[in-house]
Length: 201
Length: 201
Image (spheres, rainbow over the protein chains, first blue to last red):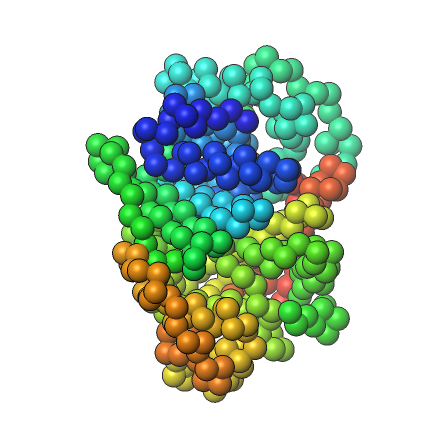
C-alpha cells in the first residue's frame, strides 16, 4: 500500500488518522478490507466487502478494483454515491467515508485516469489479476475447469478490468476506546475546504 | 448469543452456514460486528458497523440495537430496506443479507415485539445500556461529564431504546477459501419459500 500521509496531511484532516489506523492494524491481513454501500436500480441499498488499493497519486481518492460485469458497476453508473465503512479491530475505530464514486473502465477519456488504470493492473498480484479471467460473476455457476485459465498478461488490462475511485466529502471517525468514545466529523464544502467538528458518539 | 441453528435449518438454507461461521470465528470478539447499509433521505447510501444480538425468538430476523435519536432511525422510517455485509476473517467468508428492517420503538403495537424490546433491554450489558443515557448522538460534542451518569435501571427500557430487526429475503454467501471460491445465493419468494442457486464468485 502506498501512503502519502505526510504530504496530504495539510489537505484533509482525515488522511493522517486513517494512515495511522492502517499502520497500527497492519498485522491483520484483512485490515485493508472495508464495506462499500451503494444504491441499486430499485433504490435499495447494497453492501459488499472490497479491498483498499491505496490512494490515487496526488489525490485523496481511494482506489479499489472491480469487474465491469459485476452488478455494482451499473448501480454506480446510475447513482455514483457511496459510503465505505471501515472498522479496524485492533484499535477499535471506525471510519465512514462518504462521497462520489468514479469508474475508470477501458478507454476512459481522462489520460491520467487511463494511465492509473493501467498502472494499477501492473501492480496487483497474479491472483488478483486471475479473477478478471473468470466466468461472468453472479451468473449460474459453471464447472470448476472454467476457472482454470492461464495467467493473464501483466502489461495491458483486460477490457472488464475497472478501477473504482471514492472521493470522500464527509468522513466520520469514531474511536470506541475514547472516554467515553471520541467521534470527529470532517466535511468538505463546494470549494473542497475541509472543516472538522467533534460530535457525540 | 442465542442460536437455533438445528431447529431453523429446515426453514432457511442460510441459518446453518451462518451459525457455523459465528461458531468458527467465536475467538474474535468482533465476530458479531457487521456493516448495515441503508438509504438516507437524499437517496444516498449510508453504512455503519452494528452488533448482532442474536435472532428474534422463533424467527429468522436478526436483532440489533439502536437509539431512536440516531439518524438511521428516520432513514429506515422512510426506506425500510437494508443490506448487512458480514465478513468473517478467520474462515474468510462473507454473508450479504438483504431484506426489510423493522424498528421496535417504545409503545410498539405488536405485543410480542413490545415484549422482545423489553427482554432485549434486560439481557444486554450495563455498558450497552449506559449508551442510551448519553447525550444526543451526532450533535456537537458536549463535555465529558455529561457522559458520566448513573447506570440505567435494567427493568424497563428508556424511551429512546429501539430494537432493530432485519428479515432477510436474499442471502449471498461467498467463501473465499473455495476452489476457486464458492458462492451461494438464497432467495425467498412471496410465500417465504427459499431456493438456493450456486453462482460464479
